[in-house]
Length: 470
Image (cartoon, rainbow, N blue to C red; front, top):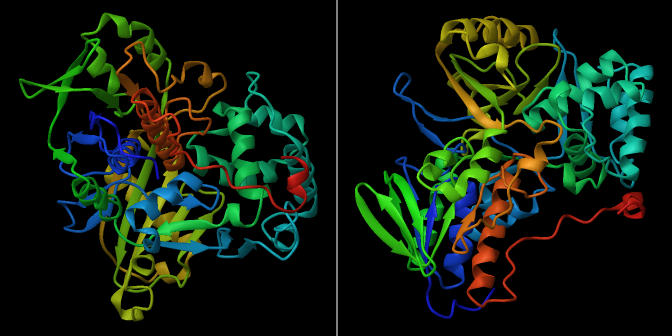
């Protein structure tokens, strides 16, 4: 724990997503006087939930998961005291149309060989596919390729990957992780995901799923900040800011509020609105203008009976990519009797093909495909359904994007940036958002005289043979 801030500096946080929450909690812990502004009536940003007016159900914007390699996100959960709201899984079930399952999980073998036995048994790939994947994995285990403008699809084709290996393995894990298609994906970020989650250690690849709605998970940050003398102002829109040598002034609802520092933690597509009255922000505006966004679609379905005994599954060869059995995942319902029905969320990452489709078209498509994987869904009656599209869910991790990701520091000495789109070294994930918040908090702490302030957590160490490659 860092020592208290020497002068109880006032810090404004603009944006209540994960980046803003992480920065707020870290600074409040260190004695800073924190005020968090969020335009919506709840915290969490894109990782949030709300009561859907059409169904009356509390639904997440989209299903969010984490991996064991997400050291900063896991530390953030511990800081808030919600680490017990995450259920961990050591294996993934890959389903083919027709219902045949391949379960891939860790064994006693040292990394990067820990998944090899399950991988060799996987029925969804043949021997030629597996040999091609193993060859590519061996290359990626040795070092991270640089971003030289090549897409990951081109890299895979250059490294002899079969069509089925690309469709059933590489696309499956990477489109979900990076929310982009392989032909628009940077080699360096794709390789990072593979190394950090599949190769580094068995612990790194464990998957965690929240067992409560996302706003309940992250809403605990409000009490955390208030308990340390901070403020959380929901439904407060920050319209602009003015940076002076000795303070930062925010314009909020026609009134001005002065602070010693400010962290702009809005999303990359919203931040330009805050910068429009500031000529010094032109280079930053131009960088943000180079970002492209990629959509995610969540399809929520309620059935009158249980359709599966799986908590989650990866779905192959169809539009829908993941099934999360929410009525089993949410606290207190995993062992519910079969008569209580099923609530499932289906996720389509990089869902460009669905953006223009109507709600009913998407539901019909999802039902048709779901029934190919789960025989129990064929006789089940759909009670209600809804579709949530996050059209600008994440920035696209295309080749060369790192050149436009800004650092936390800005041209204004008292203004800092936070968001998964900043230069974190990680792609657009919850882990990347928390890292950026901690990095921004470290900047303010150091400027305030806390030279040894350190909030950022070290990466998960490599295990087994992966220690030879760093």
